[in-house]
Length: 429
Image (tube, rainbow, N blue to C red; front, side, top):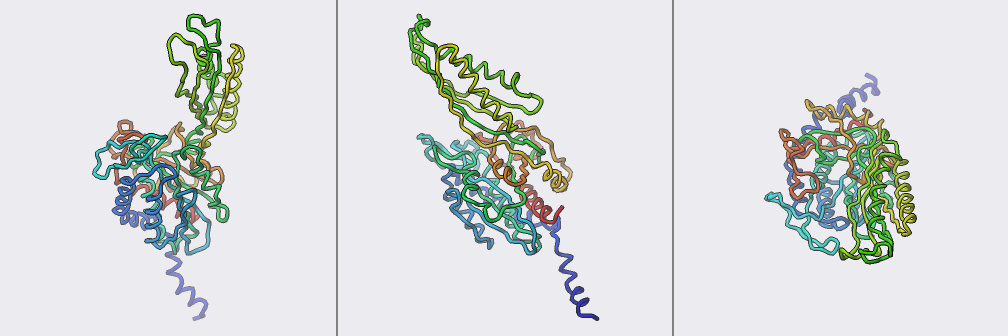
């Protein structure tokens, strides 16, 4: 027999093993589940605030090294990045998790509940993984173990992103996805796609909710000072009343969504969360300060609303003889799921879901800085139900609640989702 044909025959069994099967991934995810639960409980019991995830980063790096994966640490303060190099040439794909906890005092009563405390905005407070980031980290580590176990069969490579400060860095510090990207995690190797999972968000337990296009809102903040002239409350004509002017501004802002932007294009929200002015009932003060949040899903509409808010506030103030200072704080943009990536990966999600449907979901007015990655490369972000499968998710404690918890069998679903998305993408499916 020709030596060339003999070599092909000898290599044929290896070729047949080239593609990782979904059954293989599911089996590995099942094997990883006890360890994933253990990691989740460690993270839950040891929460740290944004940009202060020192123990968390050490734990992640230690686990990765035990897998034989060498991490890069100290990125964006406490972030960790690592690569799983596939055995065959192909694209790079990224999976990302957040790491930080919230200034919330836990009330779940779990045997591994957090008793951690820290200082936030100058106040002593409990610290808790009240948004589920403990689960996100554990699921991504489980996926890393699964993918590393089959790395020789991967037609490409995987970037693992453990990101601090998703909830927002403290004070004037930089942090989160913006600082990860600013420090160049994608400068040398930019992934073709990035995937992320968030638990909760009113999704049935263990099931997937996702949609193409806008998924989560841009979150911007504002602060406005209305400067009038103080006078006796019994003689308002001797001053300029910033309280009345502020009230007019708040009400006028509510007409922006209903009268100035296209309501058929996307929803939007302007909420004033704090108004402060005056110290006594019969004294009209010099100044009123207001703060609030703006939520949008369309970038052009976002800019239009910002401009309208300031124009309206200045016009009302000037008409009454007052002045204003208007400060706009740009937050994270909207999470936009790439439509082509969504269409490509939907069969994977449907297969992983099995008998359960992949749920369509309305755009959510909460925010996530995953959006910054998805602005630079196609991204797909989805929700995984955190509760038991037979419980109405609307009856469960919501994200950011001191009672928020995870039905731990659902962690295996998260590992399966990440692993199957990566393998199918690399295989060109």
